[in-house]
Image (cartoon, rainbow, N blue to C red; front, top):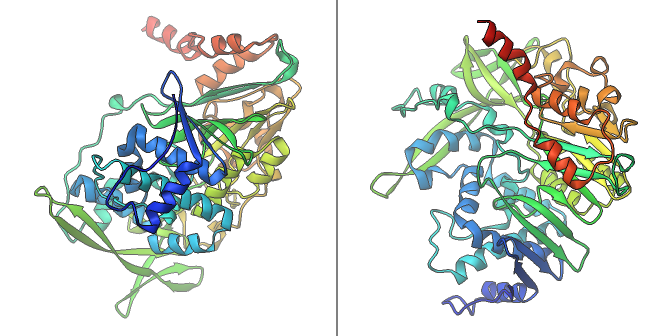
Length: 501
């Protein structure tokens, strides 16, 4: 079914904003295939973004809005008091006023995409008066910067909610919470495999994209334009770029990384003259103090708010207390660069152009398995990896008063684990370390700091290595069959123990 978007008559049809939406809609077509997947085409890249935002809203506006309520720390405005701590956690790192300043400084091409994204969602709301948003009745372009990376479980979610509530909730009534049993959690983990042309029947590289997320975490669509855009794949609800997928020349697959890019610094707090300071070397530095307001919906539907005094050091916001120390969390906070990188990689044409985009270094949570139509295959580590003193164990809080523990810039790309066109002809990653990504041709663990990996190898990686080693003559069908192999190597260790017992 092929149709051109157009505005229906509404009370706002004669406003300049509605007229702009109408013009943009005329430049877009959306084709729904037999599975309902949207294939969006526009004259310009911005037109394609307008259409794909509209199509996502058609598919599930609730998920689009909910993702942005969460990203901006406004979930409690819809869900009530139970979401206050989640909102506070987001607002420790996300400041709408700062995002608006960043939007104003963005390059023109990126502003055009953000403008089109907001226009597409607003046009959908204007033409579907039966849809009632929980909170966001009008999307602003800068909002796209609040949710710019696409991973399942962003870095900010590494700050646990219960300790956050214990630290900031001592001056008010606490909200009861119950931890979810681990047995209730959905299985997770992603697998990526790239096969070089020399191991395939047709002489072309193959890429297996096998992301595991919760049900309906992402939509699937194609977006293309007369300006050369043509990407197909998975889109995290509400974002305007294909998170992982392919274009006519390259394919890219992300697995959640086990590299350490989020750290806690234990701060020694000192009170002097009624003010708070923290030790740093031989000096005392003032603790940053500000107020955050968290609105929330009461059971009767009216709105209220909680106000919090929050703290930060140069390491980051304070997220909890442990053994008398305040814990500051440091993580990547580069919204503009993250959005640029997420978009620009969808238009890369080969390994070299993909790496040029990776030089933005605004990917902290993803390993990448890559393949292109030149036959190149590659494994890439996250590009945002802070340089640290490897004497310290950053899997635990480090002493924030010791300047030696500070981040010292970022590793440049050639300092990170990477594999390109290995002689064995295959590359894989299963959310484990990079040191088995290409069998014997993998990066060597001894060549890198400990924080490049925090978990080691996993059974899925061992299984993939078993299946890939020595195999040839791959086809698309045989690679899919391999990916669904039912053998579980970990059971080879566990079952004999069980039987013996």
